[in-house]
Length: 73
Image (cartoon, rainbow, N blue to C red; front, side):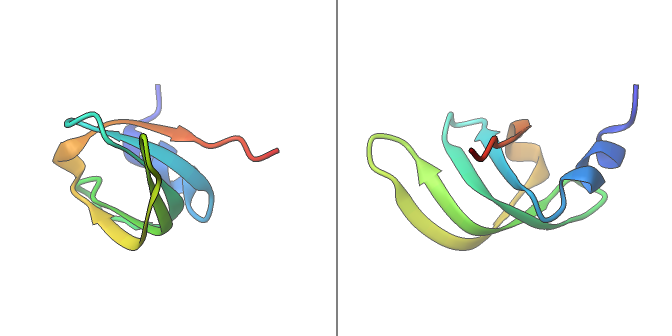
């Protein structure tokens, strides 16, 4: 099984969904990451009852529960 960072590199410049420990879901384009799995997302939207446009955000790796590729139809 590949290491998580080897999988993350395949997601750069793609739209991903990130589930956080506090159950929030962020969707954005992955523009960067580091060895601690801190992520930089561009064009980010916080999903929920109301969507919030956040723009560019940094997500700390220790707050991430799940990362998934967003299917764009």
